[in-house]
Image (cartoon, rainbow, N blue to C red; front, top):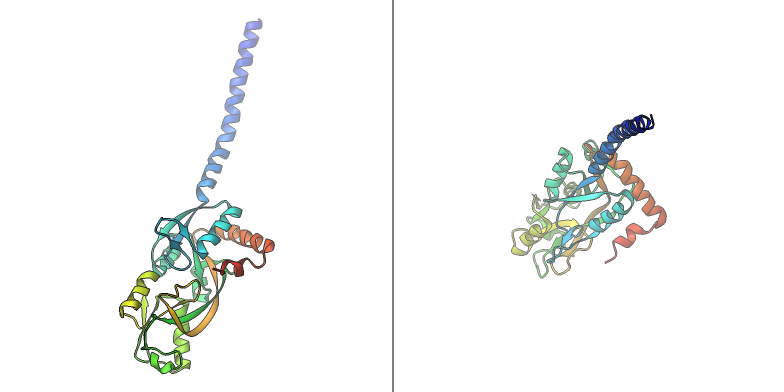
Amino acid sequence: MEKRIAKVNRYLVIVLCVAVLSALVPHIRAHAEETQQRVVRVGWYESSFNKTEKSGKKTGYAYEYQLKLASYSGWQYQYVSGSWPDLMQMLINGDIDLMSDVSFTEERADKMLFSDLPMGTEDYYIFMAPGSSQISADDITTLNGKKIGVNKGSVQAGMYRSWAQRNNVDAELVELTTSENESVNMLASGKLDAYITPNVHIDASRLVPVFKIGYSDFYFAVSKSRPELLSELNAAMSRIHDENPFFNQQMTQP
């Protein structure tokens, strides 16, 4: 009799264990899927915002900002390299999830999601190569007839056109899909006479500011295919700025 009761008890324990495991499996699977979804594909474009040192170490304004975000959001980053214009199109297509240094426009707002808070504010300048005598900061007419490079589809391109019209500047605007380093090399080799880029951590040995054409706030942009990331991004940025209201300004310091 006792053996029969023991056998029944063992059977009940096994049935109970199976029932518990069956109940837990969906939750385990859901947790695994959630963890997998927290991998964030980030656009990486070599610039003052994203730099790869010779040792392979990553650094830069955007990179450091993203690390700070990850400390609150728990995101794991997968970096996808490309030029800024190409990565912007990848963001629109849903091939990457997050881009840094994106100025807000109504047209872009139809194609991507913007953080509530800006990453910072940047000034846009026309730069020339050191030692160049073709352009003078004291004579705006020296821009006439020159080739001026700018990232294709960037806010700077539209801003320059408005600035040039106001100042009666007649120059050729060359919209580029190259990396910032390649664009600066084009300036150094004479393929471009000037280059427009933000005045943030620029290399003074390679770029000399000549004319300021405008400024704007810039933001993190999220792909519309990953809308759940936006609320996490906004929450993380809010916590960062609640703890340190001067975080953006401090990030711009060399």
